Length: 257
Ligand SMILES: Cc1cc2nc3c(=O)[nH]c(=O)nc-3n(C[C@H](O)[C@H](O)[C@H](O)COP(=O)(O)OP(=O)(O)OC[C@H]3O[C@@H](n4cnc5c(N)ncnc54)[C@H](O)[C@@H]3O)c2cc1C
Ligand SMILES: NC(=O)c1ccc[n+]([C@@H]2O[C@H](COP(=O)([O-])OP(=O)(O)OC[C@H]3O[C@@H](n4cnc5c(N)ncnc54)[C@H](OP(=O)(O)O)[C@@H]3O)[C@@H](O)[C@H]2O)c1
Image (cartoon, rainbow, N blue to C red; front, top):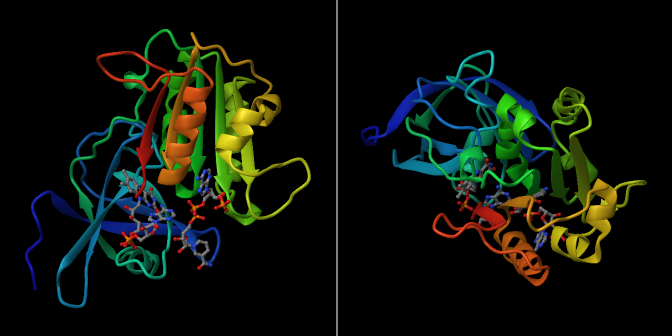
């Protein structure tokens, strides 16, 4: 057996939610250091040879939630050919799980320029997770005038966390628009297609009922790297600029693979 690598700590699975055959959430308790909403940490298990396999996973909860930062939630999808995700999908309550003590990542509120009043959170699949953490923060509610949460998935049953989103919408009192997008199924009243095309055609804006203004709008893009690439291109074509710490811009992203 290989020793526990530096930076990993032992935690426990406290619950799981099965959304579909492949999409699930794990609740984990572990003595993790402080983190910021929008960040990710590592989850790890050993394979049959005792080797450690670790991958990055975003926290779905804000560290300031009522149960304390050590009660964490992760949203996952199993890739049947993947090394770690099928092993994580086999875990049940009370099973041990290993967690990176230090979370990291820059897709956080403090990276957004102060002048931005409208926040667009564009996600595919499991990448809605860090956006739910950001929305959980009370600061998000007071800071922005309009927030649009876009979640693009293949099929309607992958539109997870409906009751949490409904509760957030009520809490945000009209400031938060939720726009689901389906790519491989039709559903009355729900946008069909892919984020970059829907952005360029104006359909996403019409659905969100928001005007885009370059001075005030900031976009976070998260998930499938080809969505991130195509949406970045679409935004540049629409006159927006990638945000850099040394030169303020309108969009930033995180790729999941
Ligand atoms: C910063 C960051 C945060 C991440 N957060 C999450 C998260 O919150 N939830 C999560 O499920 N995954 C997340 N991932 C992906 C995760 O780290 C693993 O890559 C994934 O679970 C697959 O691991 P694997 O060992 O089973 O397969 P791997 O061999 O690592 O990957 C197999 C293939 O699966 C596909 N894939 C990987 N991740 C996803 C995904 N999330 N959705 C759809 N297809 C995928 C890709 O085609 C990839 O090549 C994140 C990755 C990064 C870099
Ligand atoms: N039953 C199963 O075994 C099963 C089921 C689902 C998923 N999986 C596994 O999970 C993985 C896929 O998971 P996922 O569906 O959450 O992720 P995904 O493949 O990233 O798809 C999520 C959404 O992103 C869209 N998308 C893909 N490329 C895009 C681009 N360039 N621009 C804009 N949008 C884009 C997809 O649209 P499109 O549909 O148009 O690509 C889909 O709506 C696969 O690796 C697969 O192994 C397995």
